[in-house]
Amino acid sequence: MVLLRLHGVDNVQGYGLGAHCALGLPVECASGRFNTRGLRQPRFSGAAHADCRTTSLPRSPFGAHLRHWRQHRHLSQQGLALEADISTRHLSYVETGRALPSRDMVLRLAERLSVPLRERNALLIAAGYAPMYAARTLDHPDLAAARKAVERILKGHEPFPALAIDRHWNMVTHNAAVAPLLAGVAPHLLEAPVNVLRLSLHPEGLAPRITNLAQWRDHLLARLAQQIAATGDDALRALRDELAAYSAPAAAAAHAPVDDELAGVVVPLHLQTPRGVLRLISTTTIFGTPVDVTLQELAMEAFLPADAATAHLLAAFAQA
Image (cartoon, helix red, strand yellow):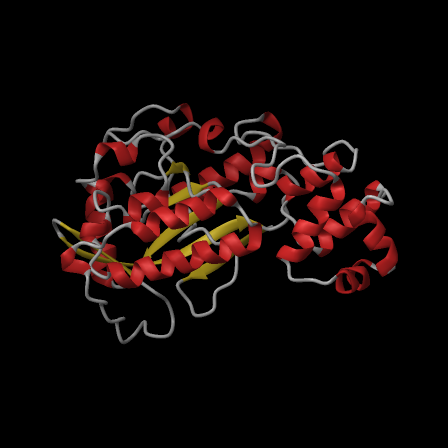
């Protein structure tokens, strides 16, 4: 199953990646060659690479890992014990190392705590068990069906821009409609791995051309905060601190009002181009039932025209 979320709405909870869905996928994208517009399209095996290690927690006994996630979810021992259908005393013994959990108990506790698959592997290893969830690269033969699904979604979204990103907002691949929008971006921001949030908010990136930058910045930082709350990822915290420190261009310092027809519905992206302003709304597509670390951490961001003029401009870019 593939899940689709519309982003920019009030009180959005979810994967927390920006604005995903899918952009058309050029043939050379999978091989990592430069496309005709000069933007490197990375291999699936690059930014999408994932292994069974966890970067957010040091190696420590299982009890310390479990306590970290329980406290991160703001649950008491009693609350988690009730959720997992075990006694509070038993849970206390597990956290303090006085009792060893079975493999089934590790998985049950991880499920109740909504621990991401990557960190579930870390919990299993800390408890003395083999990791359960594979972390194959997207070009692995076992993920051929998923890779083709990504390709179809991205290609099918043209002439509108879409891209796939990993858990740290690094671009995995994109369709042909993305490159024309990146004119004027500093070359160092297009070096792999291309971070989509940095690309959007950096003063040498898209930020000077986003006419509602303050509004869009607040939206992206709020989504990033949701993702940090869900995962506890230190790399995302560092990214948030970096983005929050960027100074907004003077022209975008004032908070642009939301269009009347979109107010209270979505936060649009207004991007200035030589041919006019693009007014876009965004969606996120994720795999709904992943049992692979890479697939759980993959999201596709798709942008849709908010008006007929934007649709016309994007069609013109595709024909140029």
